[in-house]
Image (tube, rainbow, N blue to C red; front, side, top):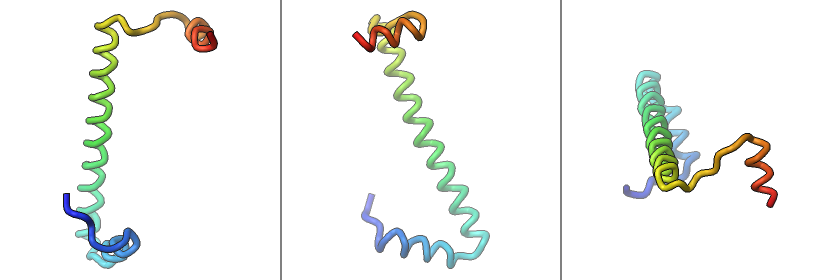
Length: 72
């Protein structure tokens, strides 16, 4: 990805100057991109958790037992 021109303040000023319809489209598009990024991070974490479970690298027990094992 190419570097963004200008500072964030300059970019925000440019966005504020856009027509309302363009700003709405930009906000919706950026919102979807943020959700996609979060979804991918969650997917990676879920795969890691599944891998840990399958390999037996997990702890089971009540919350009290788990906190006690952390204190050891």
